[in-house]
Length: 489
Ligand code: ADP
Image (cartoon, rainbow, N blue to C red; front, side, top):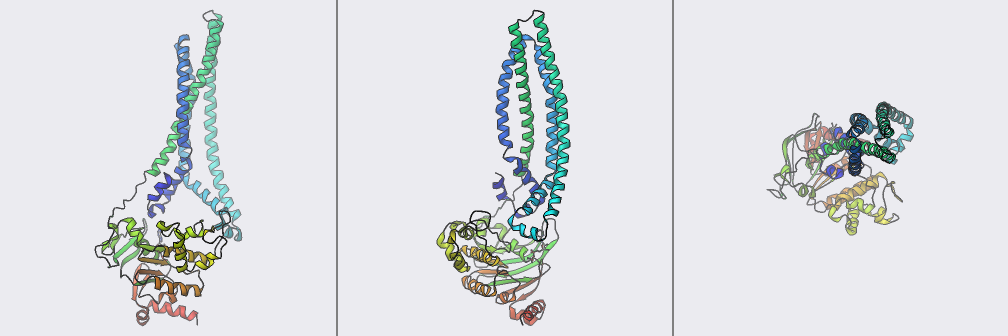
């Protein structure tokens, strides 16, 4: 349920640290608490039955005896209930620290960070921080546990006292001749059993109360609002119109505006390149295009229909995107390609076809088990790839999306050698002749062939045109191009 819910949350929600707090709280306890609740319900039932039968016997001795039994057990119960509430609030309040602890554990003990941790000698530093958090949380917990157990012990003594008082009473009655020896033995037994059944029932009740408190974390998470993806359009009002941004502005939730009044038009068969400094808003533009976020002003149209009115699945099927930080799945090579098109996830001929386009076929063929070689180091016989090889995998993944007519590559070749890069783009152009392509790159050698080049600066489009036009304008593009060209002379 937790993971199913995660699938319905928006990217913006995932970028909110409070969501992670809720998620962590839900995940931590979710597996044990519901089962605990079931077990305790049964234990309560069982003990209630014993208690009922013992109660009937005891009342025959004296109704007061029953009252003594209850009075003896109540204080412990009340203090337990109070402290479980306190424990819950303590646990809840410290999710951010617990998450920091989990994070440090990951950094200190995972293959992708251990390289840097070792070389920079970060073990001690991070471990110290980890221990500091641990000690603080431990001290809080110890304080609470001591109080909880202290009160439990003192109030438990009270219970024991009432218990012995009742024992004494039974014995006195026997000596006075009101009870036979046989009855005395029975009442002593019943009293003892009754007390343990009662305290077990009360423990079950306070435990259920505590489980319920923790389950509220699960519900709180599951009740996270989900943005309705309300659109239903599966085709646009003006097929063939392509992609339009009309006065699009955007600010990340709680942040300042990072795109200002962006307009562009891309028709099928055309290629668009985005150039600009780091942080100028290029990737954000792609996130808007893929509807991971919605513009704060203006609109984006695909084939004449606002993206908001598109059916989410129909829209995403038309777009193939490879982000800079594409995912390196710890799965076989073939499936690493297959994720690009869930309809062909296990289709080996499609894998191969895509890999040939993405220039990954050759090195995949050389791997020990070909397309079935496990990638990454987490699982048995996993093979690690070089950065450039991973990029070829990602590129091939984009080629898996055969039905997509918008292809977006966000710095897809940064880790490739120049020969590979040149070939990638030659193939890319050939493959995408009738498609819309958007390319983000810092290499002018790849950018220059795009039919439309947009220069983005601090969220605004400051120049646009073809390579030749932009050079003739002699503005920012021309300056950057010459700067890079000089480096190669
Ligand atoms: P580019 O791709 O051009 O390097 P981005 O589009 O990634 O730039 O970032 C544009 C701006 O948006 C940057 O100032 C960055 O700090 C901010 N930004 C990027 N991603 C997020 C995010 N998820 N939440 C808030 N701000 C972000």
